[in-house]
Amino acid sequence: MQAGSGNATEAIHQSAKIGSGVGMRKLGIGVLGVGDMGRRHAENVRRLVPEASLIAVADPAIERARQVAADLEIEHAFSSLEDMLAQRGIDGVIIAAPDKFHAQAIRTAASAGKDILSEKPLALNLADARAALDAVATAGVRLQVGFMRRYDPGYAAAMKRVEAGEIGQLRRQQAGIDAGQIDPHRLIE
Ligand SMILES: NC(=O)c1ccc[n+]([C@@H]2O[C@H](COP(=O)([O-])OP(=O)(O)OC[C@H]3O[C@@H](n4cnc5c(N)ncnc54)[C@H](O)[C@@H]3O)[C@@H](O)[C@H]2O)c1
Image (cartoon, rainbow, N blue to C red):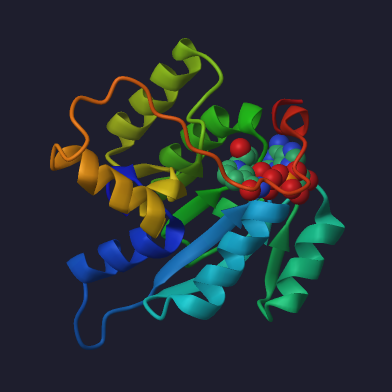
């Protein structure tokens, strides 16, 4: 995975390009938090990224983790990040836990030497964000924060037009997506 922002599929493709070649081992991925987003990440890694192998999922809701593991036909489901990190074969971790757990999970995964794709936000405050980035730098691992909208064709096209100066100087921009049934309070509780 590379520094920057994007989605898991893109990040893993990028990383695999760096180390692609005959006989290269697939990137082993573990997913932390398998609610709506984590399950989607796990499915993407399992079904859509030939360069990666979904090794394990983890969620304190262990029944959910077991169900996702069963649905995706993988062997390992854990109730904690620490237990998942002890599993052999994991090179990178996707963090899709609720926002308030991201910074600590990044520190834990970095300390274990894993590359990381974390759902946004990096942290809920500046001190935690700095601590997470320090842990990543100390460990020498790679961290990407997932801003997947940057890869949406509509958003990317808008950015190109801004960069090309087609609409003059941008002073304010507003974009919306259909967020369906998501309750925003749930994400920060
Ligand atoms: N759902 C979306 O469309 C969407 C889009 C962009 C970003 N995100 C981000 O993805 C993250 C997850 O969102 P979601 O919608 O999947 O939430 P969710 O509530 O559906 O899933 C969260 C999962 O994390 C688990 N969890 C709870 N505490 C945990 C902990 N301490 N460690 C690990 N896992 C824990 C829960 O059991 C649950 O399975 C959030 O940070 C959110 O901002 C979500």
